[in-house]
Amino acid sequence: MSRSGFGIIGAPVLFIGVFQLLEMMLSPALPLIQRELAASPTEIAWIFTGGLISSAISTPIVGRLADTYDKRALLLTLMAVTSAGALVSALAPNALVLICGQAVQGVWLGVLPLTVGLFRDTLAPEQGATGNGLVIGVGALASALGLVLAGPLTSALGYRWLFLLTLAGALVAALWAWRTVPATPRAASGSVDWAGGLLLGGGLALLMLGLTTSASWGWAAPATVALLAAAVLTLGLWAAVELRSGDPLVDLRLLAGRSPAGVTAMGFVFGFSSFGLAVALPMMLSLPVETGYGLGADTLRIGLYMFPLGVAGTLVAPLVGPMTRLLGRRAVLVLGSGLVPAGTAMLAFWHASPWQIVAGVTVVGLGVSIGLTSALNVVAADVPADRAAGVSGVVFVAKSVGGTFGAQLGGMVLASGAVAGVPAESGFLKTYLLSALLGLLAVGAALVIPAAARHTRDGHPDPGPTAKAAAPRG
Image (tube, rainbow, N blue to C red; front, side):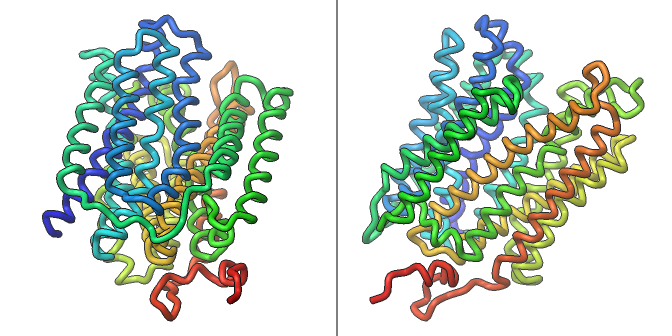
């Protein structure tokens, strides 16, 4: 890889890694934050909810901005805004200011779809595939590493240093990007549909708020029902507006093509079916050994159990490109999609000893990394250049929404069989098996995607028959 290619990939990957690391370190630090800021449980919940809503709103908008304007300038702007959010969070004198800082910081997720378009515009296809793999792999590694480092760092330095160290890493990444990432030409045509962005942002905000508060309010609570109903109505109105727009924020007709639809469905299913690993496994590991199925692990040991997830993902992600050339992209898509439910099912039947946990987690890590990397490579290969970042943004939002749905479902399954507040082993078994069963839907989504990149006669990616049928005729 050339020196310039290394910088183009390295700067955004470093930036994504440090903020993914912070997100995972923040959860174990919440008790310390609550004590030092005298925050209420509701305020603590909003530290996460505010950032989650901010990410959901900003990601598709950033994706469209990246398709339209200079990606270098947009990348540096996002890095500056996100760094400002980290600085506000580090210096926050109370919970309200910290919540605001986290909401500003939440726009970092927009860098993910931006990188897909950036790599496509500035790198050879093989280097772009490697870059996409590193984005997914380093994100997975940072997630696992965050659980390991959170306890020692907060104990030694305090929670504010989590933000300050993240800020330092972000500034290094920004300086690297400023020196190595080239400018990209502005699209010859197109603009940002701000009305569509407002409706989509409002609908996603209502949806995420309804999902995250349902655990405390209850699904049948009037407030929860009202939020979810308002979300459906707002998103329905957004879809109607987008279909009538000549230059929509998200081209729904393009999104209905086989490749974009299959990749988006894979993203949602990966997020939705992850509740077995994200919700059930840490809880089971932390239960006392006396239960017969818990391992009595503290936060540090839970992080060590989860660490192979990130290591496996990081090691295999750069190999997805060569695997695709060797096996074909559909085979690789199916392989990644199949390994995720296989690893989760392993946890259902084999969780009595540490090596069994590590084996299941490793298989899931391989599957997620292979599946998401190959999905991003499909977007880069099949989606028109002026829509690649926007479609990638939709994929990441779908994964985030799916993960929020899955977390609520996993919590309900575990609670249904709990005795004195402690989930029974049968509850964990049901959670893992349900997660694995839902994960198989990603295999179906992978089979929808064409086996090879589809191109029109002029050399541009073919969005598929649905999009062509909807195109105006001259």
